[in-house]
Amino acid sequence: MSGKVMSAAFVLLAAVSAASVTLPAVGFAATSSDDHRTGGPAGVQHVTAAAIRDMLDEAIEVKGGVQRVEGNVLRVELPAENRVLFFTQPGHIAHPGVVAAQIVEHDGTPGIATSGWCAGDAKAFEIWFSAFERRNERLSQEWAQ
Image (tube, rainbow, N blue to C red; front, side):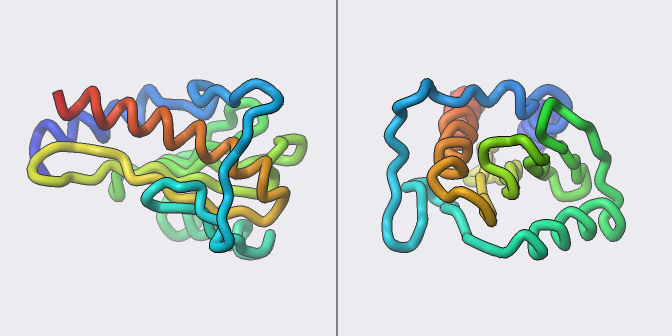
């Protein structure tokens, strides 16, 4: 992995938080289609709450993820995978759900792949997920310059 990609991974792991993902104002119209994708490249998969708990357990117990509570989101950093998982906590509008942001490299340029899993309110999750997609797209564009 190139030094540029490693620097991008460090930024994602060190500085990007769930708090930096701003939810749109009330009335924002989230897009949705029959396959429940938000229009982004990764999309959203609808799963059970048990599947999300299993993802959290695996990230922490098997992969040794570093946990940090940020408001009503549990951030789990997986440095070996250049990946950060954001798990909603009770009280979060999109609970239960998880968004993954992972540094990827395409032609030597770093970018962020965004994936999501939802077991709660699909519309609320899509709004939250789209905020990650917008932020990650902006970061990817900055790194490409």
